[in-house]
Length: 102
Image 1 (tube, rainbow, N blue to C red):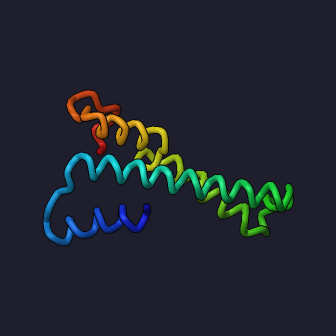
Image 2 (cartoon, rainbow, N blue to C red; image 1 turned 180 degrees about the horizontal axis):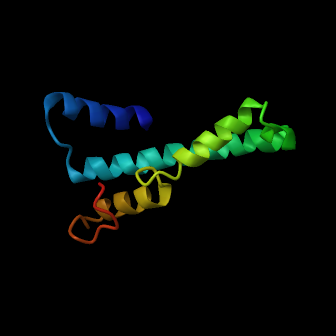
């Protein structure tokens, strides 16, 4: 999904073309899914490792902190991406958007 999202951003950019709404909405959903998946994976690792995973000397705490911050970026929020893509699939691309950042 991330490879496709990257291609659907990079290729039109290289050609000087702005992607259509459906492509942009789908990419928002893909990026949100990736952030959610990475967050879940890191949480599983930390659960398996125990509380020592949060010690400052443990690299896992840095991964956890970095993904926690990145996953809260307005463009990456999974629920928002899913909603935008769902509405686009239903043909709701008019002024009914929850954000202008599509």
